[in-house]
Length: 117
Image 1 (cartoon, rainbow, N blue to C red):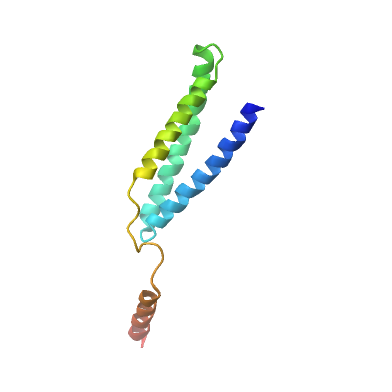
Image 2 (image 1 turned 45 degrees about the vertical axis):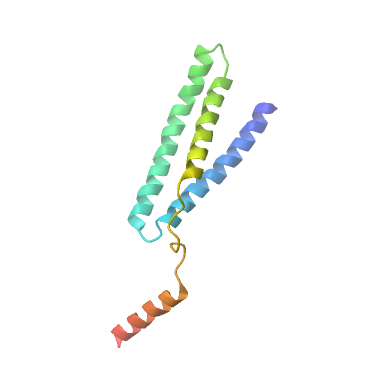
């Protein structure tokens, strides 16, 4: 039962982390669609690398450590913890990047309207 509970919590945490990474990437690069696509592609590529390496890590743990799977999970947990700590130490995105000010939107609309007439 312990392994099942750990897997449920792990899956839930992955779902939150995956969607949060994609959303934050889109938010940080909202003004540059090219960087958005590139960064989301890097997130997906890293997911692919992790999906490739993790089974090898678990298999190596089972094979070389007398059928003990926990060392692989400890390594994966340590990597997750390190990445979470590093992520919390990163500087926040520049202020004012989230959303556009209404006065800016109105000013752009007025410029567009005057250039048409």
